[in-house]
Length: 67
Image 1 (cartoon, rainbow, N blue to C red):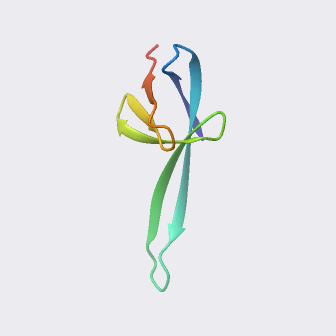
Image 2 (image 1 turned 135 degrees about the horizontal axis):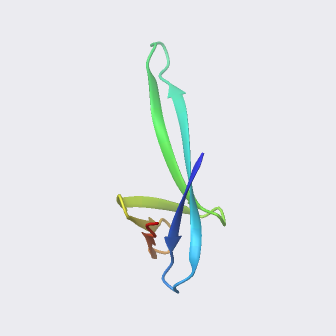
């Protein structure tokens, strides 16, 4: 699991956790890689582009903070 530091619509800094997991396709030897993004509060977010995330429930936008 990795973390991405972002700024929320109110100007606060929050973390997005990047969770990777694999899922086997039944009756094959194929594994699919899935990536889930969620705020430190547990709320799911969607990747819009490499620096922008969108809340799945509220539509709020979060922007990556570069070092």
